[in-house]
Length: 316
Ligand SMILES: Nc1ncnc2c1ncn2[C@@H]1O[C@H](COP(=O)(O)OP(=O)(O)O)[C@@H](O)[C@H]1O
Ligand SMILES: [Mg+2]
Image (tube, rainbow, N blue to C red; front, side, top):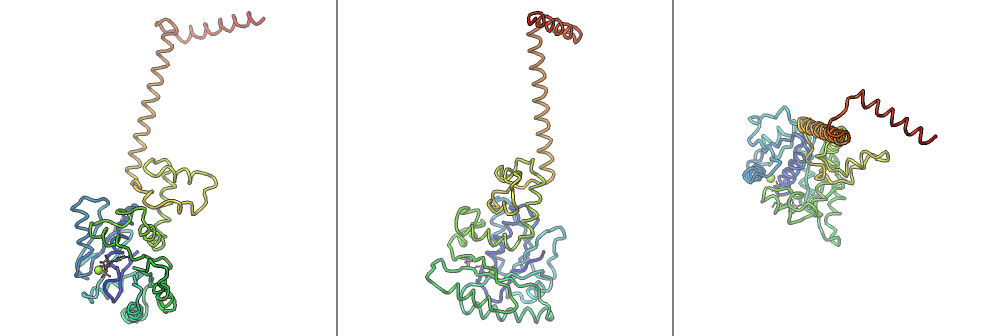
């Protein structure tokens, strides 16, 4: 699926969200590629920093302009970060998008800008725009401030966009993590920001989350995944939705088929080693029992028979 993260307005969090989504997708074992069409190349810088620091998983970013940038054929998910500075690439990205994700910060200027963007989408897709999903970014952390709720109400009423209820609050960790080449859930895994982000990512990529679960169910034998999750999935009462109890970071690393196979082979070898140790132990015990000489099967049978006979005599 091609998701284009766009807005006519700058500074609404497009690159930040794009980067975090890319890391999240890669962390959950998906072939995700980012296309950075914004001449500012903020996202490419963060990805380069991540690579320099050797942070895993690395994210694949292709930077450039359309039509020079080619879409990878093997990517499951493609996320495109666009900016208005390269309007031609912006328009072409919209044409190939399966959906547009519009981060909106809670201000009147943002609502107006989003409204204009909807018109722009219609105009540049000959009246046939892709699905446009919007959500509030940098929403107030102070409950007494109404700006976010008012912005949400305005977006809800806006035709042409679908507002999802998941919000990202205005939190410093979004800035701090990005400048270190990290996703929020990597820098502060237990933070509210991390929880909010995961909820957003899981909503946007529900189709991907489902396939992760399917893959896990097939790989119950693998030890690379949270054993708690395995137990939950293995119980008869496991309901669909049980996975929601687990953070997606708990699921990684999801092994590739080759890794799972290698693991299985190791397990098999372990079993064989144990079996051979057990065999040796039995042999040794037998030897000790029969005075180090060992006994043929025929003799053993005979000895057993006479033992039974003796027992029978005693009982009678
Ligand atoms: N949820 C958030 N909380 C706090 N700061 C944020 C959040 N989202 C983005 N930012 C900050 O806002 C600024 C603009 O974000 P950026 O992703 O560069 O926007 P865009 O790509 O739309 O221009 C950056 O300094 C970024 O760190
Ligand atoms: Mg940007």
